[in-house]
Length: 238
Image 1 (cartoon, rainbow, N blue to C red):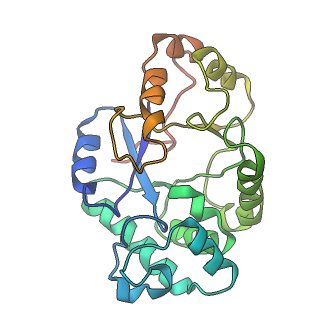
Image 2: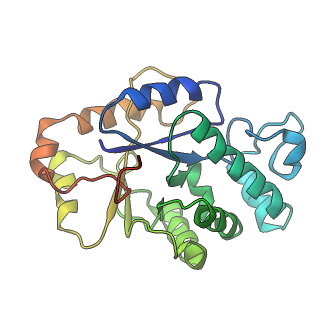
Image 3: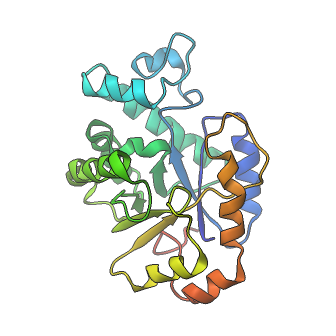
């Protein structure tokens, strides 16, 4: 594992940042969040992004608001800047960005995120051309979102393909992952490793242990080789 992304909208973010910083050779980016947890900003400053309790709306409600023009661009910018600032305050450089549920690829959100990423000299923004990840309408939606947001993200480097091993069907094995080395371009491989226990409401809790076993399987390094897996950033930040 070379890179991870910090989610700063939950109470245990400081603990996660500390653990990540202690792990030698681990690059820590920012996992932007507009759908779960609570905003870093004061909820009164981002009212079109939150519900009556000041929590984020969830993916479906956010999408509906974005699609019907009921989300203010200025509020997206406020929250994105606040999360990037929070990540830096926790000791992480926040120079490689992705997002929870890929919401940074909604065209309206992408316009904001792309502009702020350029402003803050972010050196990596995830694209979501699907390969070996969600199938059916989810995979199609990711591809369409990436195409629609392309012009807003084009001046910030990123991947050519995305492979989400957590949701691949059938589950990936080391030999299959090794085939990624034969693809052209930059392939970003996403997993969600962790212990088997966790929040029973977490939809991927049961898959975390499987991802962890795959990443720590000695056959995986043998399949990929030593030179194929790199940090997302071309140069490690000081």
